[in-house]
Length: 106
Image (cartoon, rainbow, N blue to C red; front, side, top):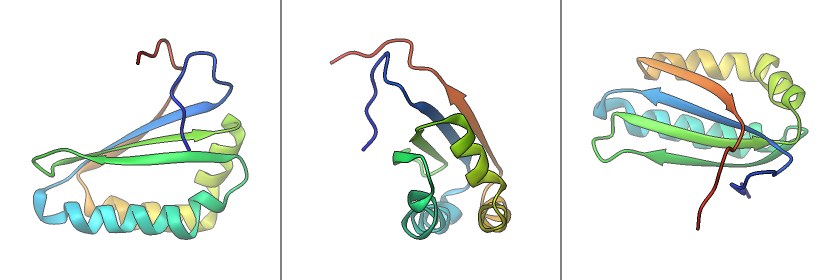
């Protein structure tokens, strides 16, 4: 389960996807399948969440990893490279970016 807090000793990756409302559900299904059957089983995976905007034109993915190298190894795997090609066909763009939590509030 992802925990958002400053000083949490994990690597945080936020990936944004831009798509049309017509492909939103297909992309969401592909992402859920990727997490269910592959990503969540990778070494160092902590947790993730998928968020869809009201217009169904953007998906934000928040994931946490024990180490930067764990996330990078998952991305470089043949399985994820294949899945990313499929994901790329369903959206206009996507970009994973690693962040550090600067502050959190309740």
